[in-house]
Image 1 (spheres, rainbow, N blue to C red):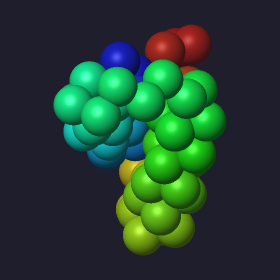
Image 2: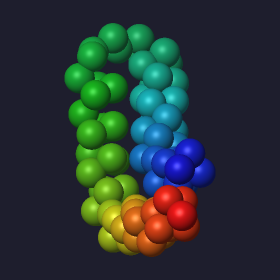
Image 3: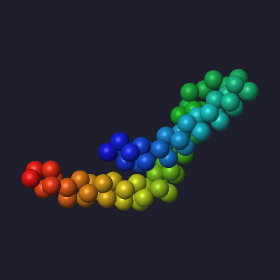
Image 4: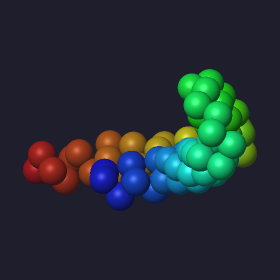
Length: 77
C-alpha cells in the first residue's frame, strides 16, 4: 500500500517541489515576495501532471484495489 501511494504521488510531489524551488530562486533573485507567485505555477504544473499521468495513476490504483479485493478470500481462510 505504501509503495503504491508513493509511486502514484511521487510525480505530483516531485513536480510541485521542482516548481517551488524554481519560483523560490526567482523570488530571491528579484526580491518579489508575492504569495500567488508560488501558488499559481504549482497549481498549473499539478494540473498538467495529472492531465498527462492521470490515466497511469488511475490504472495503478485500480490494479492495486483489484489485487487487494482478490486476496480477501485467502486472508479469511
